[in-house]
Image 1 (cartoon, rainbow, N blue to C red):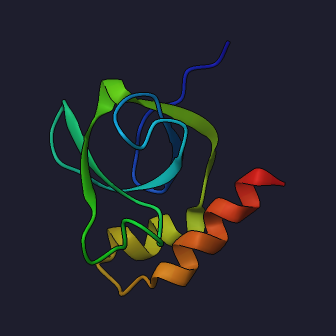
Image 2: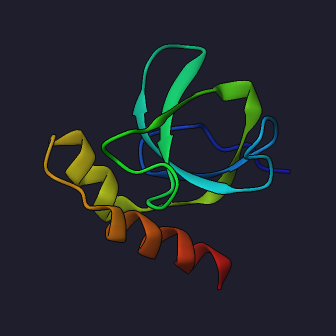
Image 3: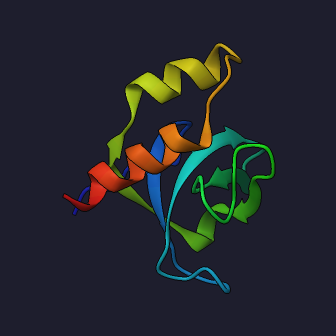
Length: 90
């Protein structure tokens, strides 16, 4: 089984907490233990959730377009995050 890193732009599944089972996009790495995640609906880009890395299961997809925008500190809209997460379900 392949283990992917939790990096900016990675789609991840919540394994713990009230949001268990929901998909998120990693939008920022804080430190070795925490990342900021958003889903574009309940947790938007303007108010991301601080989540412990151990509570997230990285999935096999990285949205490279959003990753590049986030790393360049460009504006990312919630509808872009929702679209990225909906592609993961297909």
